Length: 138
Ligand code: DQA
Image (cartoon, rainbow, N blue to C red; front, side):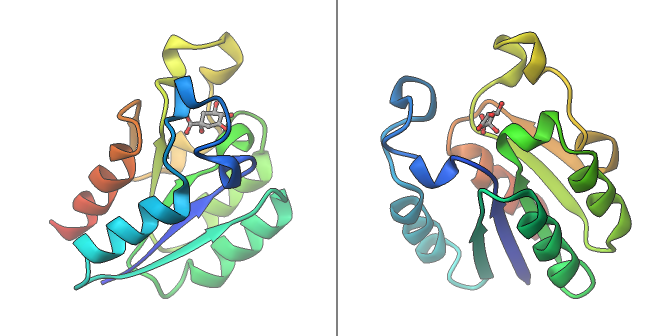
């Protein structure tokens, strides 16, 4: 299986940024653990702080990969463009969030991704990514 994790803005700061919400593990350390655990899976990774780059990446992988695990971070709540890209591609997208966005500010309660996602995994910390991978391996 060929899967990709796509992380949106500020997630390059994981481990440093608001550790009380997002934990103290950097994403590259976490990715190393994931790639070891899922060594039988082709697990790619992309992060960008730029909306259009996330859209370009969805177009690039969205007709050949088996699955996209997308944490669009703050763009989840603002980006019609990323929502449309998720709708426009063939590869199923699982939306993930580290924190439980519903227990946070009201502006985090809406998502432009969810209506077109295969499923949504919210609030399990970094384990949200693992649960998303598992969902593609069933
Ligand atoms: C997040 C939740 C978003 O509301 C926030 O803007 C993020 C991270 C999460 O994974 O919990 O940057 O997507």
